[in-house]
Length: 386
Image (cartoon, rainbow, N blue to C red; front, top):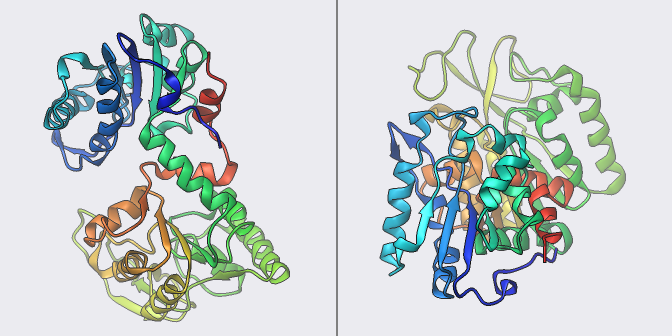
């Protein structure tokens, strides 16, 4: 996909540039707990300043304030950290302004023309470096390219380059590992990946609907009855194409009435079982035999894409499966891509987040890009004003 690059913007001396970043960092009590999304666009901002831009107006959303100001989602801590990082690179922060949270204005998510007009007023150029938001047709994403010469920043360009390679020319064998809660949430991605991968490995809550489609009993595990026929169709399709869908052969389950999850006092018995679970027992992780199989498939791959944990890894009783996959991806000889979100959190929790080739900044955006091959923000850049 050919997107306009920073170098395509022409001379930047005395230009005013609107820069959309994805600074939607995790916060706890007003304190940033992971500043990765602030660190990533620094290269783009420093390059623009070094090229002589008169002023950078940086903008981002933070959380979900629902269209009105909310002190909980103030951009102030992000602004402080952004300026610290820029100053550490020798940048002149007097030429950088970070606007307040875009989602304080309902016009952002509504793509309101008046809000777009307020963003582009007095601006000469637009740069989109917010891959984590380009799947949204929001004002700051799709609006400015209609009025300003535009380009993709370094973060966005890298994401599209890497994920585009997965879609068009991956080294083989190409293995995708998907977890997460529901088949219905990732059905489009599953179908898109089955057209491209050699092996699709499925864990997490979604595996139980597939196991049910094979006739296994799944106890009280997360299960979508209305997706069983779809899973049966997908399982049948791989028999025709010669590709593989690999499902768990053993499960770690919690007894009826047991309590699990982050921030809760764990209770209940834990059982290692075949795929067939006793009534009322809930599957919450893949078992050790499955973890070994999944790890072996990853080790033999040339390209690996992983999105979604294998279980409720925040509860240490159900963390072993996700840990095994995270460590397998980290140690793989393959080109490894991790699709952000909970997978990125798992990598960090297990101390291997610096051992993958590409860690996407947008979980939802990466999945939608793989499913559709394009996103609203990318289309807007390609058709930007001259």
